[in-house]
Image 1 (cartoon, one colour):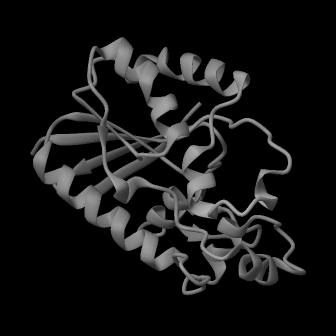
Image 2: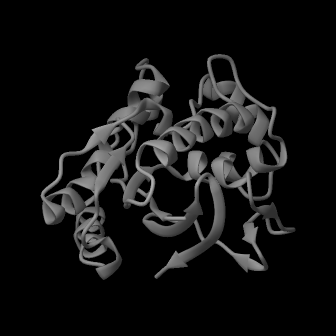
Length: 208
């Protein structure tokens, strides 16, 4: 039985912006347009030079700017196009006022962390952890059939990756994901190597 390797990547660091969140622009549009910082561009280039990311067969990315910008260096090194799928997009934040109310008195100060604990919570026009996990899982089930035995790069987002990994990971007391006693650090950027036989995960490791 052939193994399929998926390199699941969280995009690199984005630029810090002040004030934009106070405009009348829709939170979803703001989220989609965030760009990489100078440091993020450098991180993406370094990431693409990891030997694990040589001889890739196919690259998939979220349609968000920061994910495509992270994927472009890997695509260039492997002479491949970037395929886009909206199922890889970050979970929709929806109403930011409701999200602010939800986050009041929360100790992590990270909505995606808190949604690991409250998987059904969502704001108006937003998505829950469970909604996001379901669409991510649908995407991965499809590509595992389509590219069996291949090496696949998938670039997505912190919340969406965390919620997808709930299929195999537990959440510890520090609200971190744990796979077989190993704590995963889903920072920007991160590189996870997932090994599948058919659609069954047989190993998950974080590549530094």
